Length: 263
Ligand code: ADP
Ligand code: MG
Image 1 (cartoon, rainbow, N blue to C red):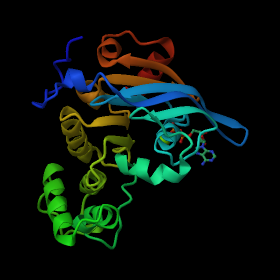
Image 2 (image 1 turned 60 degrees about the horizontal axis):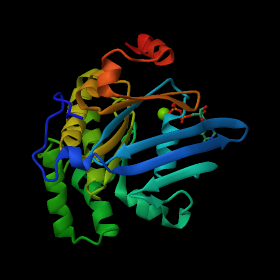
Image 3 (image 1 turned 135 degrees about the horizontal axis):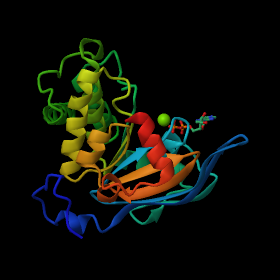
């Protein structure tokens, strides 16, 4: 297998190819119902370290539920989830430990409105990791630089654009040094001119080897940053194709119909 040329190669050791050989997450045939409605049906997906998976599918197909189950925000009814080879499926008591390793970014930012950008980022490292205020502030400064708003440390959420708020939310997730990032439609609430700045930050992180699952309909981002594309419909993972195969045109009938609607 050759590394796809469209994704920037990070100069790290071990090589990306080596990193990507090991599954970080293995989701095996998970089921989830809300009352009588089966929302996830035998969904399986492996995500290897360093991989970026883009997940697409119609509204209501179960994408958010899949991410929430993976992050143990929702218990599954059946199946198993392995993280670094460890079965975490029913470790409800250790859910907070798992969540510490998996950063999540939502459509609606969910920043604390009474805290500055820096304070939003500092909160978890201080409370959960025990960092001093000074160290947490240094970390926030570094991360605000990484998400390309180095001058916004003291700004409050309502003084920031939507795109800037979402980048603070990404920085806040990164502050816990997660092994994986989950993004649930991170640009859906943004004005068009702000979408790109958020996607650029996400693409940078992916290129640096951050393992990611991204629910998005931004197919430009998928083409640029995804190693694989997963298509969900009616609670089922219908396809999980490499980006090359997907954009090369080998897309099943149902995924094709969906793409025709969104493109
Ligand atoms: P998507 O993110 O693909 O739009 P969701 O995972 O949000 O899909 O939802 C899948 C289905 O599960 C939908 O029919 C939705 O109404 C239902 N659902 C999601 N969360 C809940 C919940 N907490 N209680 C009941 N039904 C839910
Ligand atoms: Mg959703």
